[in-house]
Image 1 (tube, one colour):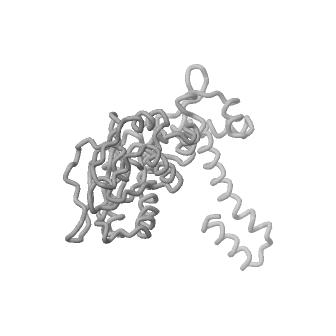
Image 2 (cartoon, rainbow, N blue to C red):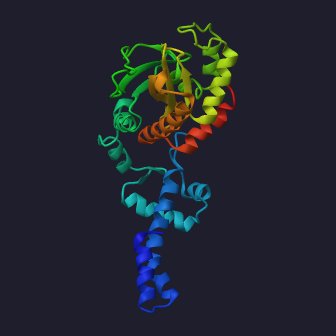
Amino acid sequence: MGHEEITAMENAAASGESGAAAGRAAAPGRSGVQSIDRAVRILRCFSPRAPEMGISDIARATGLSTSTTHRLLVAMQHNGLVRQTRQRQYALGPLLVQLARSGAFPTTLRDAALATMTELRAIVDETVGLHELLPSLERAVVDQVESHHALRRTYTELGVPIALVHGAPGKAMLAFLSPAAADSLLSQPISAVTPTTITDPDLLRRDLAQAREAGYALSFSERTPGIRTAAAPVFDHSGAVTGSISVSAPEGRMPTERMHEIGAQVRRAAWSVSEVLGAARDAVAERIAAYGTGG
């Protein structure tokens, strides 16, 4: 309930008006919110599988009556949220295209993540890294916000392809790839780059399952000696994993308990970046459910 509605009812009670009168004063606000909710439900009907829909199809998909659906579509068309095709179907409207191309939305992972990375560094004061999933199913460090500590993790290999099986940033992505993609990587020999690198695919699968459950992955000096890392996946508008955010520190400042605390913080930060990229929880959940428990 909005602040204006609460104020309206409080004022009505103070002036001795009946509860029914107070309800009438608040009704326009509720009606407006309901219309917005319904309009959003209509917009969510459109997808690559259903780019155009008729009134009856939209009504069935939203659970609204045909008359209510028609009334909302007329208003939405007037405001550019939908358009009517030559076949008298409805599709997403020009205003949405204009907004998408206005420059108001970040166009790169780095643009979407930098502010959140800076905020996260201010909280934990450890180095925050940004990692992008490459078409080769490797990752690359694309940015970092370094810790203020004199002894800190500093990435020197920006842009260099790194195997996903090495370190928490890669495992955070690998845990949310399709089973086929994950299997293709785990079927290859895993080289040991440090004494604690996980080279057994079965142990790594167990690690990935824990990462899916927790929403973040951990690395105990598995890629860089003396460095511990917590990382969480970043998803795009389709629900696919597109990168990860990490927090790394010397192992003396990262006992296991703190790693899990930071893991939860990184998970929240990574989801904030995912939302900037257009990710929705239902789309991510749908993709993960389709993958099952593979990978």
